[in-house]
Amino acid sequence: MNTVLRIERPGGGGKLAANILHFARVLRAAGLPVGPGRVLRGLQAVEDVGLGNRDDFYWALHAVFVSRRDQREIFDQAFHVFWRNPRILEQMMSLVLPPSPMKEAANERQDEISRRLAEALRSGKTETPESDPDAETEVEIDTVMTWSSQEVLQKMDFEKMSAAEIAAAKAAIARMRLPIMKVPTRRYRPQVHGARVDMRATLRAALRTGGSSIPLRFRRRQERHPPLVILCDISGSMSRYSRMLLHFMHAITSDRDRVHSFVFGTRLTNITRMLRYRDVDEALAKIGEEVDDWSGGTRIGVSLHHFNRDWSRRVLGQGAVVLLITDGLDRDAGSGLAFNMERLHKSCRRLIWLNPLLRYDGYEPKSKGAQAMVGHVDHVQTIHNLESLSQLTTSLSRLSDTGDGPEWRKLQQAA
Image (cartoon, rainbow, N blue to C red; front, side, top):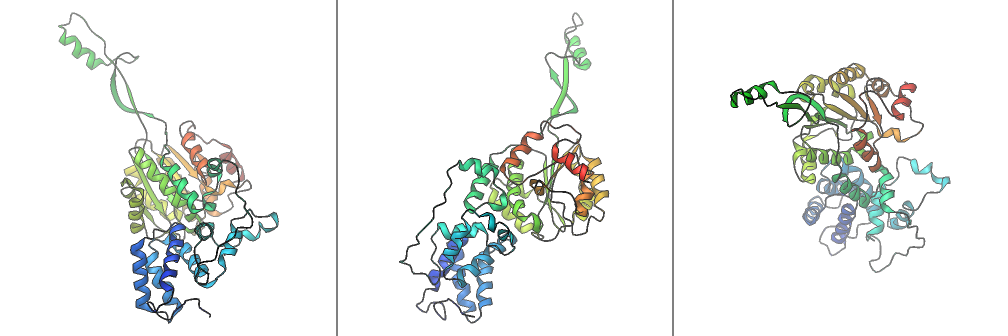
């Protein structure tokens, strides 16, 4: 296999150091947290392993630049693009052009290079190992759209966002608030006027006046937001959405009390304490250290079983509202899922299923997992872009306790 490295060993007078620096810039533009320290460690790692084996070179940079499972795909694509194809800029330019109807099917193939990487190479004008530093890239076709970027961002699928659009979406999510309806509690609080007389307070006031008069005292029930429990799927089929939804969960946790957050793939992990860090980057870093099953398989039934057994009595008191975020694709083919969904449904005030696959008009719950879930939820809604998140923040404050919405009725009929 031909290699594009300029020198045989680091420090030999070639351009390897500069190429590694440009490669790090591509990764940073694509969303990976790559700073000067990692670049220096990458140079040292390459110097330690040498250039005799391409796999050693790949894994040396991988060990330095990749810190989370969700970063592996971007790094792998960037490495093979940057270090193999010297004319990749021209190919990457075509990826950000509007697709023609003839190529829509081809754009769905599994090995398509991510748009985040394409934009990183395009916007940064990054120098590839075989490119001329003095050469200029000429843009022959300018396809910049003219409508509002904010409107486009609201309707854009999280899976199709570039690095800059993801950053803008994260900033918009940080400003979101979740207005869950208030429910009456068993406690009372004094009230100046009202329909309910507080007999104890009235008798105490009468004793203070010597019985000459009996001033009435009133009370009313206290109202409080019910606890909110979030169960988020972080399996491979949900990885594109779970990263953005973690920012949404952090914004909710920072806005209100009694929010309990869990993630699950093949096992259940409580991330409530990690989300309480004020800095969202620090919170996500702590979650990355705690969670071991990112982008793997999904065992929804097993995860809900552990939740019902270990956590339901702790967090589902006082009429909690549960947000279950998953696409319903279960590796165990729905084994035990119906029973655990029924138990979860009976233990909470309202169970809301947020499914990104509902963005497709022709979606039907054909998988075993989805069929087991659809009969035990109060409401279903898509959650794939900023607009759907905004709809969620408003629907929670006006929905009834029974099933509602066109998506819910469609799934009930299909099941």
